[in-house]
Amino acid sequence: MNNKTLIDKLALSRSLTHGEYLALIEGFDEELAQYAAAKADEARRAVYGNSVFVRGLIEISSICRNNCLYCGLRRSNAACERYKLTPEQILACCAEGDALGIKTFVLQAGEGSFTCDEICAFVREIKAGYPGNAVTLSLGEFSREEYAAMKQAGADRYLLRHETADREHYLRLHPDMDYDNRMRCLRDLRELGYQVGCGFMVGSPYQTAECIAKDLEFIEQFRPDMCGIGPFIPHKDTPFAGEKAGGTQLTVYLLSLIRLIKPDVLLPATTALGTVDPKGREKGIAAGANVIMPNLSPVAVRDKYSLYDNKICTGEESAQCMKCIETRMKSIGFEISYSRGDIRHGSI
Ligand code: SAH
Ligand code: SF4
Figure 1 (cartoon, rainbow, N blue to C red):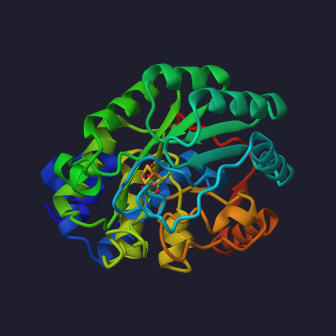
Figure 2: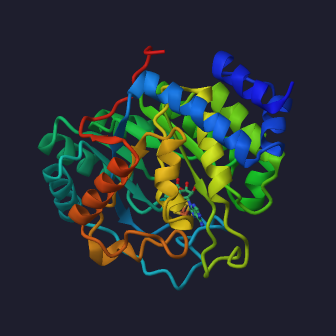
């Protein structure tokens, strides 16, 4: 089968074998990417039209107990300035976001910055203040009981990238973490009734076409509600400082393939994609992504939340970020939707 035929097969059956995914990755070129993007655009429009959902990202702490080799927040990075927002500061960010019409708050931080009780307390306050808004957590690994408590407190969604579906690759990126625990977390979150997001970096050190094929197979099997993928970008104070960043084109192509695997998936065009290419987010949306995440963090802490170098949007106020995103989306024929943007199951 030639590669375009494989794209057609994926668009029809939403499923390929490992070998077929591998062929699509190894056979990646601009022409194939354009073909996949057109099919992905069609699949997205059938479910979501030309709406792009916004999620206000609030980076609530730069403290982290983990030591992921790629990340600027890793605990061994002594140059990272650590901060932790107070519940009052978090609520002030939500108030600013709500005033801008944002209906989903994504609270993200390094792992272990907040106890489960602290998280439950601010989630309760946010849900009491903004009952019509969704709260997404992206705070790393916890026990099933802790995730259950956060759900009980009102959290709606959880983002936990699987990072790589290849066990050996996982160990090379996180020598002191446990692949099985990451997968356990994702299963628990799903069983507890969260809308769940997984995802991975494109072009991370040691990643091969085999690894990416496994990521796509994992996504096909796990059927996430959300999927966050973005290019790996080196950070100067990490062991991967000298490594190459992931590419825009491959990331955009993979966004198209993921849209074809799961037409109703909520798929962000990430800040990392906008960092490696000034038009990266527009390219991602045009090729099948349908979520964008303006930054709602206090401007004073934004450059301290330094996962990778040269992160965009660290200087702008939230309102400016929102305007910029609106203009960018309009320029490519998409409309920002100010709804909560839950997954539209069953519409395919
Ligand atoms: N601590 C939480 C959430 C914050 S990190 C967690 O790890 O789940 C959020 C995401 O940023 C990670 O999942 C990772 O995929 C991404 N990330 C970290 N460092 C990066 C880098 N150097 N380049 C691109 N993405 C990176
Ligand atoms: Fe911590 Fe997340 Fe960065 Fe890993 S990726 S070091 S868990 S903030």
